[in-house]
Amino acid sequence: MSWLDDIRYQFNKGNNVIRKLIIVNVFVFLLVHTVRLFGQLFLQDDSVGETFLSGLMLPALPSQFIYKPWTLFTYMFTQQGVMHIASNMIYLYFLGNIFRDFLGDKRLVQVYFWGGISGGLFFMLGMNLIPALIPYSDRPLLGASGSVLAVVAAIATLIPNYAVRLLIFNIPLKWIAVVMILLSYFGMGGGNPGGNLAHLGGALFGFLYTRYIRHYSILDTWGESITRLVNKVFKRKKDEKTMYRSYKTVYMKTDTEEKPNQDEIDAILDKINSSGYESLTRKEREALFKASK
Image (cartoon, rainbow, N blue to C red; front, side, top):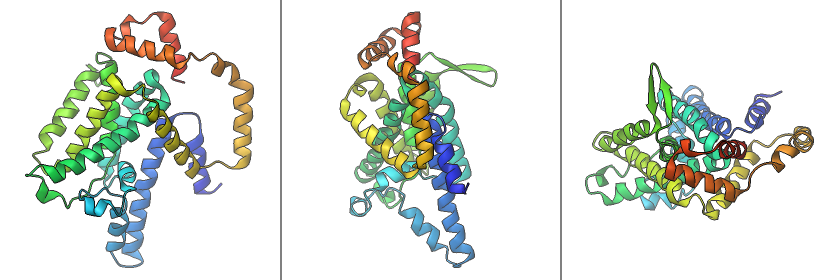
């Protein structure tokens, strides 16, 4: 099995969208640094890697963006430093899995992509409209932080008092989200104003998604289209597809049929919004658990 086949296998193993998002982020990170290293070692030209990276980063200036519209999507999978990608993927893994337990993979994809788009648009608007930031509008944007913060804000809005263990402390999700948002807010006065604008744009979308817009069908349509596109890139071999479909048909049919419909799930999520997760009955918690799988 080649290295690409191994990536495809890991990408399609199980039904965990967080695994897929992390693999895509890591793949792009390794690709960027491989191109950079190739240029340095074999072509003795540092500009090769920088040119490749610039084709993935989101420019602030509309005059540049119009020639690279795809960067509104690619920037949210592009990290430059090891600590940059490590911190983003750690947050995505741990808090994203809590998101999955309550809202499922489909909505996680929606929040990640739309949160990233919201962060990118916030970045472009702020860098061109805020007087103090206009001199920095030549700096492009990269990183998954806007998308990750959208996921954090969305789940913290839904279940604000849900506590996670950090060392010896149990910290409610609402305080994790508040700290991350405040750091981004005050960080706008530092050396990365554009990146922090994107964080705030992602967080705003996450909050609005949980509160108001998760019922909108256009999000489902776009989210499914993006998911199909990503899956196509890592398309499985024909025999692997056949085996998976056979397994799904024989062993998973009953579980799929028993899943509650969307109206039931939306009613449960609205109840969580108004009264908290603790107000759910046992039957409602079981229905939510089935729907998230």
